[in-house]
Image (cartoon, rainbow, N blue to C red; front, side):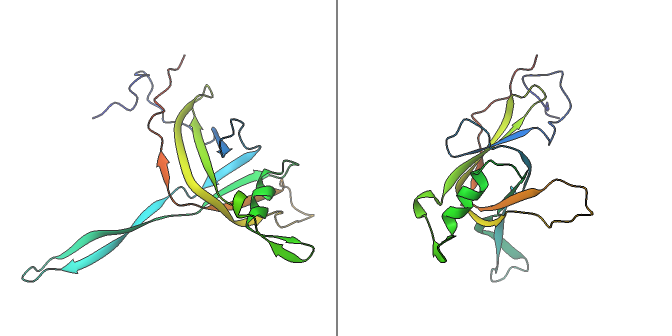
Length: 169
């Protein structure tokens, strides 16, 4: 059995899912108020084929697909979500306008340890906003905060293995 942690050998608890930061582009400041990240997933098509004289159906690797990633956050006055969503399309005096220059960005997701140090980093490549929800369903009888979300299409993501396990105090 392998050791779950190589630097902090007395640690056995996995990292918590509620400690993370999200960064757009090359920014060193995390996006404000992101409360949920979902969909960091990839899958590959299976190509089945049969070989003459063989009773077994063989399976080969096909194309790999990367699922859209959704970011949720509480509604504030920070314009990051809306400005990026507007690059895909926004009405300008009734006519649709698109900004290809600002459409695609790199996104960085960092999972933090209990001390707030980055422990794992994932980099999403060539992302663009395919869906933007500016307001949730508004309900006067409800008891919740207003959440906005964006859905990011991407052309692949990778686990940044250059970020090693941080030394914990």
